[in-house]
Image (cartoon, rainbow, N blue to C red; front, side):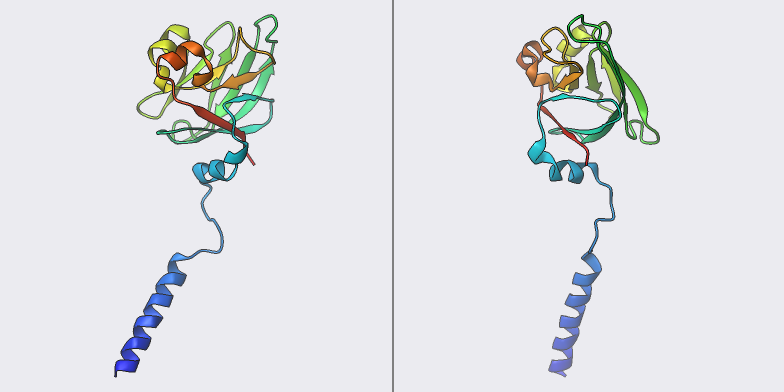
Amino acid sequence: MKKIFNLAVIFAALTAAFTFASCDDDEDDVIDDFENGSANAVAELQVVAGTKYQAYQAGTAAFTFKVTSTTGHYADQSQVVIFEIENADGKKDVEFTLSDKGDSYLMRNADGSYETVGKTVADQNADKIVMVLACANSKADYTITSGTINTTLNANGAKETKFAVKK
């Protein structure tokens, strides 16, 4: 009887192991994707229209965004970067515009939504800024950065955001 009990326990343990083990990653988890590409993650990145990127800031959910359009140039401060954040409202992709002449900061609100803001709001909410379009100090077109690259935001408590091309 003892042998049967021991075999039953071993069988149950093996069954549980196979039940919870998976040969394939069934979920398209942005954070897992980001961590897999995090060796190439940077705090400053030149974006290209038609390319998908990932962003991660400690303490917030990682997000994926696709740059749909880039126009203008950093030299004459006329840059415009239009991008969509995947599932930004939990249901559909939402489009945002960062520009030299308009709002050049992307802020993540407490409810998980995003909005573009200008310098004054960004300076007052430095810890919520997840993306900055490099304007006056830019050395290349369409450079996005972490808030920690910006001297004022960094002094006001910005958190580092890391960016990577989505594989």
